[in-house]
Length: 128
Image (tube, rainbow, N blue to C red; front, side, top):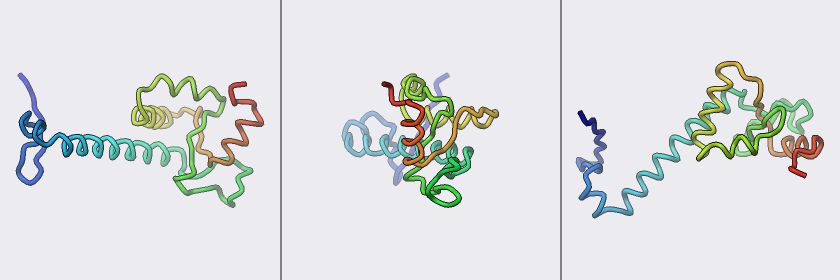
């Protein structure tokens, strides 16, 4: 048995082949927007599970940076670049981090961009 998911926009079944063919630009826009919304959703969950603020005790912002535009997920022990390469996109990466933190992993922390770069230089995590 084949199960189909139908999405309707103003009464038009956008899953139909003919609609997709005749409205290719609109279809691609819908697909991109859907992926972006899912990525933002999982990023938000991952950040919330990590405390939504910079966890560095030496952060220049008192209490830790809370602006999500500046926050980055950091591997406590380094080696994040190699691990991220195993994921095909950011959505699966954020979902993985969220699930790891949810089960109790202490391998990840949230740092602002400044603290992350300072840690990277001090611990020689720059690949050299």
